[in-house]
Image (cartoon, rainbow, N blue to C red):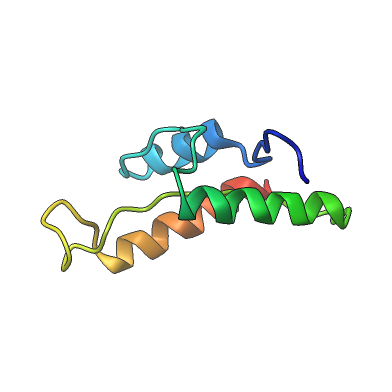
Length: 91
C-alpha cells in the first residue's frame, strides 16, 4: 500500500566522500538489494512516511567480517566507518 519507490534521504555521495577521505573503500548505490535488505529498507521508509516521522533512514551495506571472508573488514574499522557515515548524515 506504500509508494512504488522509496528514496533514502541519506546523503550517499557525502557519506562515500567522507569514508574515502578516511581511507575506506566506498561507492554510492541506489539499490538496497533484492529481498531481505530491500524489504527492511522499503518497510522502514514506508513506516516513517505513514507516521509522518521527522527522522532519517537509509541502508548501508557493509562487508563481512575479516574472520568470515578474506576480503572482509576488521570489526574496529567497520564500527569506525559506520560512525563516520552517521556523522556525515547528521551534518
